[in-house]
Amino acid sequence: MPRTRSRSQTTSLQGRYGPVDSSGNFTSSTLVTVPFLALDEMTDVVTPRYRRRSAKGEVVVNAMSHIQTSYWYEPVNHYWATYSGGAGLHGGEGQVWSLPRQPMDPRLFGGLLTSQKYLDTVKTCEGVAITKAYAEAGKADAQSLVSIGELGETLSFLMSPLRKVSSLSKRVNTLMDILENDRKVYDARRRKYDQLPEHLRLRRDPPKLVKRQWKIGKVQVSDVASLWLAYRYGLMPLVYDVQDHWKAFQNLAEKPPERQTARGKWKELFVEDDPDLVEGDAAMGSSWRTTRSTQYEVTSRAGVLYEPKVEVDIPQRFGLELHRLPSALWEWTPLSFVADWLLNMGNFIDAMSAHLRTKAVLGAWVTTTVTYLHQSRFRFTPTYGGAIGVGSYTQTCRFKSRRPVTLADIRLEYRLDMNVKRVADAFALGYQFLTKLVKRK
Image (cartoon, rainbow, N blue to C red):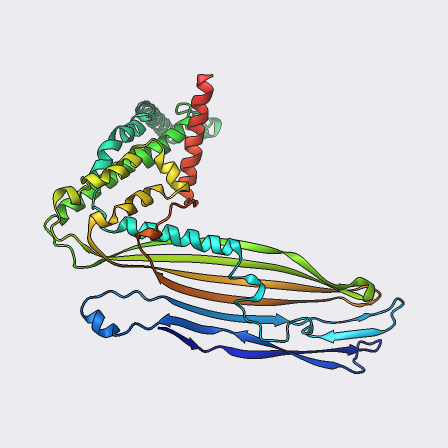
């Protein structure tokens, strides 16, 4: 049974317009009132016998939505001539007469929560978050099957720069020995100089420490790229594998909790600019130009409540079960980690086997929070004379919704999952690819 609770309030803006004199003062005017609706409305679903059903262990996920809006209005004060030569002056305060005469529902204003780009973004965020949550449900402590398959590639990343590193370390040690010898020679000469009589010291220049120009090998961009990739995809994966397997060994004797929650999250930002809206008739003395822009932030959080398997054996704890093979095959694919930057393929494959990794999935949900800031800027331009007027209308909104989901809601979505380290990875991989391409030619 749906239920709605509202704390919305309606406020009004007032403006007036009419003939004015040459100083811009009204000779007579008409008062116009426009109501605005500040929303605070929540809708949810009432579950019959909820307490009794919850006490028996049943998990109930209810749909819910909550919207809150607020607005600011900067009025436009202006006047204009309706005829050439400055005759027939009219003026306005507030510029509200061009707005609707009924309460402006922010859910309908400008289609801010119904535009196609907004709907597509919500779909992507929810799909990525739901898929991530299902992929984390019942996940093994260590991915031994993946580690075995990737061992060769991991070692190749590590071995490529080792020869250059060894040669570089030898040259550094030689340089340090030479610098130390220069320091000893300088100290001995300085002691002898300081022991000379003063009249001899005045005639001679004091000894100076030898300054040497050294090059420690020819460090090229390819060397830097190779070292970075060896660190990111050679050394660190080995460190993480050791940590995960040690954790799995420690948890072998532990009994998992009766219920666990796996979570996923995704957020996107975008700006939507509408075409300028031109109103009025310049031939009649004035025209309006409205510039509209909306900044959106869409955040989706998904959760999967499940019962873990009671008897956790070694294959499950270490990710050696048969259903892990599709995920391992994807991880073994060369440069699959690059594809995961653009497509949630890894999580999608893991999500499909969520019911095999858990005893039971008790419930799943996704909560999406949308905040936007909309600005409409007005500019009034007189044709035959008068005063230019500018103003703005600003509206903020926070819309939160929750709905139950199932495994059928997982999605293979395109999204850009990048950070500073991955940008560096992309440059290093691109440079190495181009270098190999040039050498082949």
